[in-house]
Length: 168
Length: 168
Image (cartoon, rainbow over all chains, first blue to last red; front, side, top):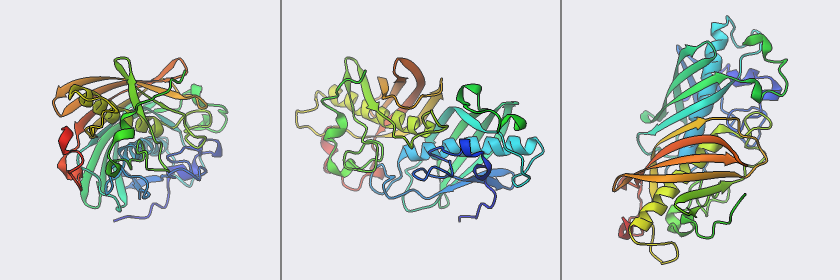
């Protein structure tokens, strides 16, 4: 069921902002989640590691929350980048988001051994604030739903603004 | 600010249920979170590893969600164990909970390099369902708040019921 994500928003984050444990391509110990478009939806895949269990046989809820989190910020970044008239590959630095709030509903136990698929829908609630509704599937089974409120990275997070000023 | 947790509920989970990536004492790659009583509140400490960053200088939100998650199920287990007339150390196997839902509000960026302290208050909403309200502090600063709805582990999670039947 895994489709190849050719163009992920995390691939083009500036290096200084590519260290996130969930989705930073430069964080070798992290999950290196990648989020791209799938039609009008956003998509992130992840295959949990054997240690990412809760009870043997089932995936850890905190890992699912992490998937929800980075899928959310990545989806908001994809959405705003496109709204700004840009696409991955055009050389324009995308906006970078942080999570204001996260809600996760564990509908069914998530079996291990499957590649998980997070599918998102983005809603603008303010030019710098987006809500991302996400469904996570293990195989064909909907196991988790959730919402992320993502906001354009505030100055309190920035150590160097030059890379992202142009896009927000 | 870190007090020693002498008696953590996770210390006495049966071995079969001690593999959680967040709080399983047998999961060597996990966080091995431990939750105990602090007066009428529940408490969990964790010092994030250097790789648990979002932006350099700040803690990863998914790690904070994981702390909220396992602190929540651990707090509910502490609460029900005591309600059942038991205390850690009396040899009785405690109940084991799973997370039904998780809500995390990121109030302020969480600086790295600090030991985080999660403080919880437990509310019974059904004999098998508890809500845990949690505040997470980095030093003296309140950085994250959240709620976990934790339910006694349903049979769908159990591969072997003999160890936990007695306590729920």
